[in-house]
Length: 125
Image (cartoon, rainbow, N blue to C red):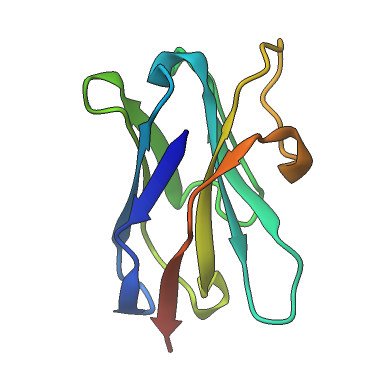
């Protein structure tokens, strides 16, 4: 299973970016998908997750109302639309896939089985 993340870059505070993550090697609809991020010197933290059906989403409090996670089954791709970006959103963003079937979306990185390579997001003040 391979996850390929893209869409990062440098943006001014208040701007927007859309991250994409394409999954191959496993049926896309078999995975819950998540986005995590890691800033320099900090632990990896949960950002958002979406269920395999796309019917459920969950966000960290720090991004709720600004970020939107979505998925396109036809393109095997999950997206993270990031609006009203802040300097504290600067981090490497990782997409991840969880294969286990559960009744809840996980906010915990150890419950995700496959990871993308990360894409850098830098927000200047």
